[in-house]
Length: 502
Image (cartoon, rainbow, N blue to C red):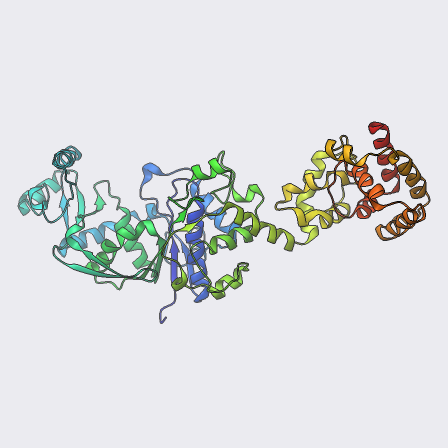
């Protein structure tokens, strides 16, 4: 590539950034970094009626949380600003006028009522109304009117739009990096509106002009924009500009595999579809996902590295990524697979970092200050984290390290309590009282020696001991638990259980 690679992510601030939009941003970021290029964020807010307060900052915060920040954009001027289309309003009229001057576009004065009447008339005949070569000379525009009349209407301030003049009877040869060669018959294309009478461009004109002025070399966007490719390529040609290369990414599909993933799917099946929380919708961050896990699973949605590798750091993704290995067909979203990724990243996170996140949860649950310290919580995390997917799972997995059980698993109680259990446990208490070094290893050695001396089976001692200490048949190595809670607490829990369970 001779020119420096420049890509852009250009969302509209009409609400929260969908996880599909995050993936588009990610693929742009990976491509730019792979080729030593720039990743630009442009806010496409030409449709002010749909603008949502806070959405722009949400987009920026989401990219930053994911660890894929933009190099150039709002607050990071790279010499191609402004980066909000609403602030570039004065730029577009010149280019719309240039298209009219060169015979590539025309004024259209048709009223909404007139166009609605044409649509209804076509529907009644079983046809679809398309504003293009076959009817534009019969409609109210500068192609069907005399030049003097057109000028008069412009001078009068009549409302108008500027439409692109699609040439008839041409075969367009388009190229998409992912989809290959595409042929389009211009006879099926409509004359899209490029500029509105309120002085604002439509997406099509603004998009092409901005990409040209910002020196974008590759347009990597969602599949839903594929139908616009013919118009955009023709606009580049109409201006006499070199067009960027295009790549249209496959959709992210519902977990069932049919249809585009939506917010409703997440609400119905209980998984996030936004990176951060928005109003009442919980995001991946708040759900407890690591940003690295989100980036990893998104990268594998529609892109295949060509190997069996599934776990990638961001640097590894940059090194391995290529648009040629992006799939054409949609990628099915798997909520369980996202949890698998998160579990991996949780296991790789240092215990002390996890403990810092877990400590506030512990403080909410208990008042015993001796347990509310980072050293103790870090040791607990080390013992239970392999069973967790999220930090929020930690309390349920470890509550017995902080508070004595108030209840005992009914099924386990019936199974483990025998006629001689109380005598054995009382005898065990006497042995525990003699242990001075209450480390896990030493306690295990002495208790096992006592079991052997008494000629008891492990099944007579260990399961009921776990039940008494934990309240259930869960948890890590029992002697690790005893060492953590200490000798006096271990004795107290055994005695309490004997009293409660009779």
